[in-house]
Length: 314
Image (cartoon, rainbow, N blue to C red; front, side, top):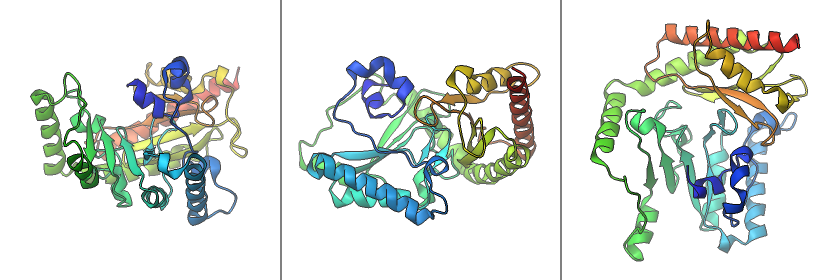
């Protein structure tokens, strides 16, 4: 939600109106998107190896001494629709960064604080970042709060330097926000909500696969915990996306929030290349029950089938 954050982002549509104001010293490598990028018969290890080589090549192109850090989402949220990193990817990125003295930075504003079944999404692979951003699951919507977590390495660098972090915002450190976030975290722990996220998340995946796995326009069902995305395609075999003018994701959203469905699906576009591609995100509450999951999956299936029946008749 700042020019700095947008400057790091690869979200083409969100960047477009602000391009003249964005930082010019930020460079991109491709996302870790196995559905779109994996070669036929390619193993996880080979795929991750290509990603590591790409990052290493970018370091060499720019000059390793000029690079401060590498930023990634362990599970990509709004931009791609809940695309989880391939096993081994986070470790490979860490190794390249630390080889050259660069920081490993994870954006877990969407995927963190329990959404993916562990408090931090990186815990799935136990790859600890140097810096991490957190947000949504921190306060659970009860107060507007976000935070930055920093490692001992970063703390020590500050202490060995000026000893100060000369940045601040007007409403940082507000006690009411902190109290709300603390209570949310207490409830998560005492009611063991992470386990529920894992159990119901696995069940949600099973239900979605059963109901929509063979749908000709659902190209991929992916995610982790209670963070799931559906990517829509015109052709399931070639993975060809729909024409952006059709506004498929928005149609799914608009249908979902209307009677008789009355539910929310988070739409996104640009899934393929920043412009083409449609997806929706499902992110149920951590206290969801098995019956809730069945209802959510059934309504989602009904919405998707309704929308594509109408598109097919155009």
